[in-house]
Length: 264
Image (cartoon, rainbow, N blue to C red; front, top):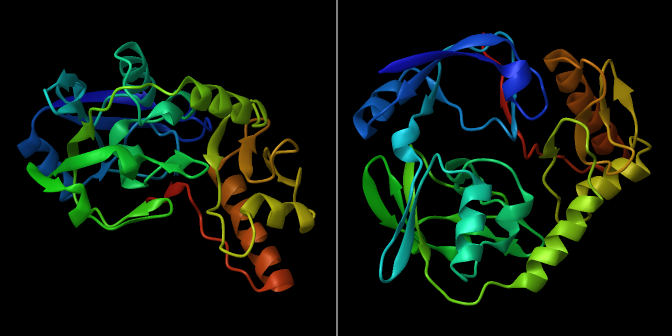
């Protein structure tokens, strides 16, 4: 088993966290053993990590691969969204066009059933290797930005369908233009059924509202952004304040879409 020192203030998308020892699982058995006492970290593109967080681990390079089969494309959980997007585009395959516009590793993207607009990762999946065992996608409960996966995602098998949709690539790129360029974790809250989270924050006068160095973006209210050396505590205070404000005004409970690791 390997270890490395990671500065999460540089590593994470929102540029928050401390310098920590990160264990690296090189085999499925190592990953399963570590998961009993440690928390799995992907690329930290949607994860807010406390400076007090301990016992973290990641998957090694052995889990970063793309293999083509006659009937599917198998991808290791550590592979980046961008890598998979480029492969599908080059091979003229459809189904994951939105991966070119979102960050993160495939494992994390599947875990939260990530997507853009009505397009979700679940729609392109045949099976997922969880804890070393392949499970058909139909046997997994996927919902909006959520799955019931309880275990370590090792790999995934995607549908192999010809016809990369260039018009969707353009659509997703245009959507990204409306998102802030500041360090961020993407959408902070899940969209409630009644109204979008961004709209709720906007009509609650929280667009641009900040605490310390953290703020809800002036460009897109549902993006929690790091304006200037924002801290984990700033982010937590801002999230809590927004949830309380929206609930007091509209009796709607905002649920975080980002993952929060508080530590001790």
